[in-house]
Length: 235
Ligand SMILES: [Zn+2]
Image (cartoon, rainbow, N blue to C red; front, side, top):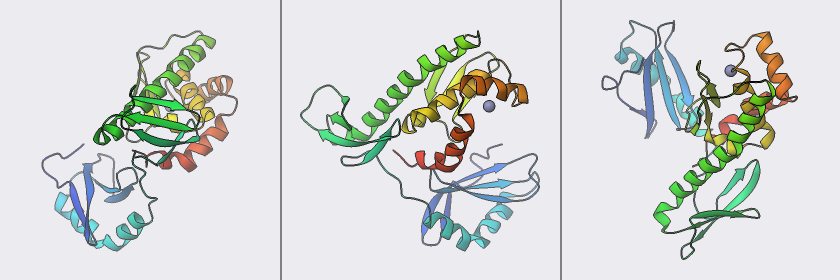
């Protein structure tokens, strides 16, 4: 349950302000502080009946811990000329061609971006979302055909904390940042969501379908657990 309007969305940690998200969780039993690596911020979870004020006191009490956690986060990598971004896991250098035409294009291991510098970051993000969609949608259809299913609408978008999801009516959603991972990882996430077209749970039967669609699912899951947060740093 978000507490929009009632709780601050900024927290002072040491000498700086960081983004803060406060939530009440119906099953939480203790106040919990979690670092949000993607935002470089803090998530504060409250059990029902605990006031925001008490939560903030708890956060202040643990400011030193928060500060050291935030300081040890790997730096963000904004989309800017000279930045290296992994595209399907392979590093690509962003190059700005102010006089160029054609928006954004990829050649060899470079991503070229034309137009005004203030539009570059958004153009790269849009380009990556398109690339993600082009990589994911055909895979989803192909894998669904293997198990005799048809996916509903396939969407690729920004997702805060998940790689993909499958709704009960078969719509598939994917995190565009998967295009930054090696292709085998993307294959696994697509296989995982497609397998939900058969089983909506994470039962043993479900994992058997995943294994059928993606022989190296275990390795991909290990990769995501280790490197997934890293992909959130880009842009
Ligand atoms: Zn799942």
